[in-house]
Length: 327
Ligand code: FAQ
Image 1: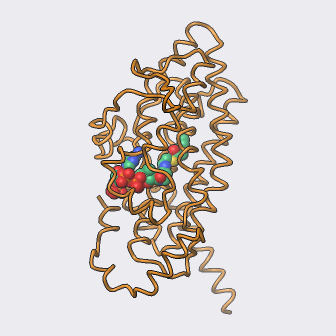
Image 2: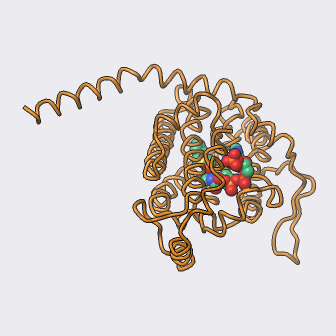
Image 3: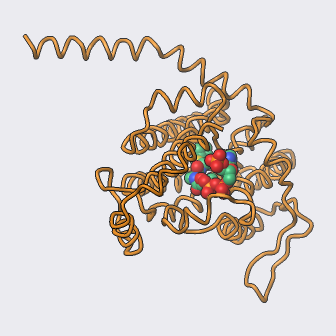
């Protein structure tokens, strides 16, 4: 995959880095100081950040599509206005994140090309379909809920521009989560057909939401180093567990059933035990075999081509502005 190649392109690079600079960098990370764009950083740290931040940016942009699908069909003007604002927020998150990756020397054109060529990763969750309105509730509640769980610790990630982008993103994600939960509350308290819709959406989104946190820790090649660099503050399994513990009582409040016969409170651990995740499905979706994978990339490519005139107009304006300044 492109992002892995980016990170691992030059394995020899580490050995030629001056030991005093590496030691000073590690001491700053250990002291919880932010690393800023102009600071010296190990090449592998820079590449890891470009990998993670660009994947995160792509996820936000592709993540606009499953919900965007419902903007014209939202059941009321109020729901439409809220959904429109939410989807626009996701677009904004993608733009902050692309900008953060650019501060590390990544080129926007290269990142976008990799996405359109199907080489870049983005979150598995956005490869699932949204056939009913209840899916919009389930996405806000579960997908934004999982995103918050993952992104709150990223407000303290060691790279300054990424951490600061996360502060605003998390505020907006909280609103998104609330709006999703409110849709689920309305459906769960509605007619029996509405309750069935809500349960069906929970049944379809629960397991993919748990997969969002990434592979189990013993199959996560990047976690150990990213934890050492304080890019990641918690492991994939730790965050997944926190999400389950926070979400089960929310499902109970809705009167909905989490589709996991093995789910039960573990008194000794003070957390919920849950059933086995189908990791084969996760890895297949990561490989680009998700149910909507082709359609998502096609939609992004079309949006990029349809928007070419906007980029050309901005370039022409900039050229005229420079000519005026030079005259
Ligand atoms: N999907 O060694 P690890 C959102 C890949 S934003 C696809 O554990 P790492 C907002 C991983 O890249 C959702 N690929 O990797 C929203 C790696 O491949 P690589 C996105 C996945 O980086 C809501 C390989 O597997 N959030 O939802 C996934 O240490 C509603 C091995 O994995 C972020 O990006 C996956 N789920 O940990 C928008 C948060 N998981 O690169 C619209 C920032 C893993 O070596 C609507 N990212 N992989 O080829 C992170 O926290 C981390 O990158 C993880 C993965 C935790 C996702």
